[in-house]
Length: 351
Image (tube, rainbow, N blue to C red; front, side, top):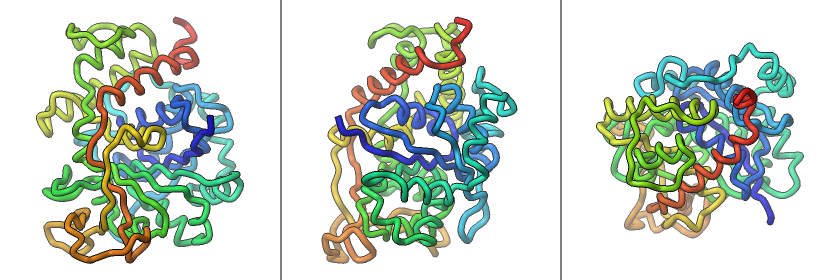
């Protein structure tokens, strides 16, 4: 099987944690490296969170994290503590501290390089092309391709979690990742490579409901049975994931009245491995940069008013917009990844 080479640019974040787990354990993917960016929390926190998660998920030793942008290209930085807690992984129990020697050793492998430097080296060195999966603000990607435009030829496609068609989640019309750095998103949208948008319209269908929690906790198949949210998971790793999802569920219930947390970023990773699970249509998509009430909105030209050509760049139908996901299969894939991680995680050494 030919594996898709993937670079993950993220801002962990509860759903980024699930995305990272799936990048490591979906057999169709080969994770080359990870870069982090401000977004769900500060750039310092996202960097430390990503390293701790790589350790918890038993990532190969050569995979490390390159710290990226701490602010947008032009605007003031945002963080989303209302959803993700003070440090981005609120409520998550059992992760190894950042100060642990094993985590520090993984951090040292970056050799002091930042996100742009790490991405540049990986993209130049890789045989073939890379799928860039973006699950946070696109500041790192915009900086990379602005500084090294020749690297565009090394990109197979950009798959990003972001945007919405007619809806937002941190403004009436803007999704959070795009809202954080609209100018960076527009730079990426105009790159002459295929882009795949995984918007709120799709990720809001990928709810990790009580049946999925039961399967996570008990390693069981789908069942109509319900469990007490205080029940004890079966391994330390499953306990960590349970507490992560439980906190995420509680904030989504409080803020949006959802009955479970949407696994936004993991859906984008799933597209990189299994595009056949999605329905999608190609459109011209731009980002509103100047609107008083609409900054960060992804403007999808549903009726082709602009009459764009079939190129992927600034004048063409530049984005394949996903519209539907096979949610049960997505949940199955995630839980299969948990099963694999459960055999390898250092969190489980004393089980």
